[in-house]
Amino acid sequence: MITDIATLIKTKRKEKGLTQKELAEGICAQAVISKIEKNETTPSVDLFFKLVKRLDIDMSVVSEIFELTNAIHHNRVYSDKVKQLLYMRDYENLVYVLKALDNTSMTTEELLYYDWLLAITDYMTKQVNLPETIQKLEKLLPQVKNHYFQLYLKVVSAIASIYSENHEDELALQYFESIIDDYQVSDDFRDRVTFLYSISRAYFVKGDMTNSLTYISRAIDEILEKKSIYLLGDSLLMKAYVLDETKLYEEAKKYCRNAITIFELENKELLKNMAQKLLIDIEEKI
Image 1 (cartoon, rainbow, N blue to C red):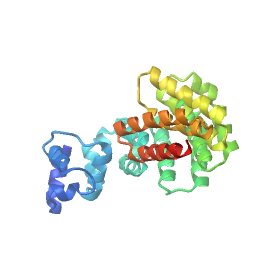
Image 2: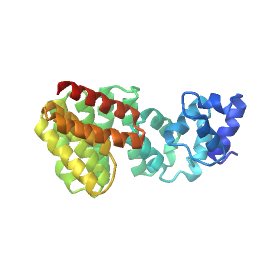
Image 3: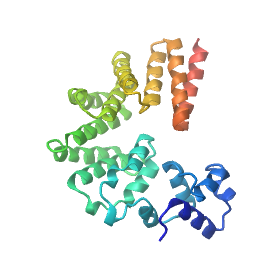
């Protein structure tokens, strides 16, 4: 049985009759493949799953590598790999990982968390429509409210965010505002920041720049206080959008440039491109 990523990639590449250069084409530099196969570096989650797809590696093999088999499944739904894919909004690969999990061996809390993740990823990958997604998430609410309150907050926030993306502004803010007080006393830094970013975005979509600016400024303050970069680039870009809308162009440019720097560090190309486009748009207005 193959037990490490280096051997897996090298073996499957040779089975496919590919050179390192051919495998790397359009994905990464050939030197990166060489280092992976020599076990000198570990690929990022995103890169690993791109290689898995190109090499047509069976998910059962991936499960063994990531210790996702039934025998050693404990808490894998909470793994750093899952959290990183969610943070990077890499829903295509997140679905891939979630489908590999054996949900029959999960605890009640793990299963509810899994169902929340699956509802989000199925919606974001367009496998499930809006009404069905809302129905799935609302079905979770009574199951999590009394016993798993942090998860309850995540579910409510997800419903609100989805409504906001579909310009159901009043419904979105109704859900967000119902949990403001709970998030203010939450011990989970990442959940608090995610909430502040999400409600700011919802107010922005509605056109309420005052509240949007208030919440995104709080998010940035909390991130900097923790000396973290979690959602920092996203929050800086959100603030740049708000400042642009309020015609504070010089301030908006500053936040745009800072966001670009963070996105470069995190390898968030799509968001970096969005920030660069906004910066160009702002400069044309001055």
